[in-house]
Length: 262
Image 1: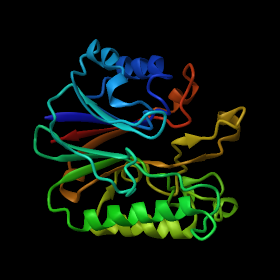
Image 2: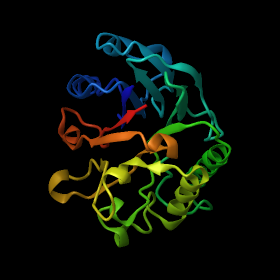
Image 3: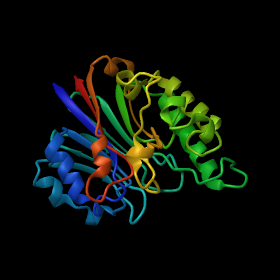
């Protein structure tokens, strides 16, 4: 079967329901993984997705903060929620696709403004979160896809200016090293870079502070789609929907879609 999986940090699914609908109508992925939904499970906007044929929805919501949701036109099996933040925040949900492949949807903490855990506990929480993910990944035996907002831009060409951002949270050497250890723990294939090889610039996030984001293009690649080696061999297409950064009331992130012939 051919399966199109999308990931998008939507920065409030209810506030941006119009552009979620636009994306689903225009691009019609089979599965949509949302991060930063910012809504408790009991008031999630189910009707929006039901009317578009996305009848399978697995949620891990939280009022006003964080939250992830995996929404699908194809059946999903099981549901598990790992507390990699170790404080109950809703930042992960896992499901099994019809062919048995695991799909992990994750929202890594941003980490605050200062890359020092001694003066900024949020940065320490982020580093510990990635370390817990790495321990899980190291023991993973089943084929899987992991998607979401990792809040780390690992390569020099994943940011608009490598030297300028070396001390900025999301591109510091400590974070890059941690993400590299995570990737190596399962030999994950970074499908974004598989289809858009370095040194090509490739971004998925632009700050709201940029008045003209296209003109300045001061972006970062914070959002990722990784696959187990066996699954990555079956990836046949990849799209990053840059135009979504201009839609209506936009998220500061854009959606990405991978096509897998599973």
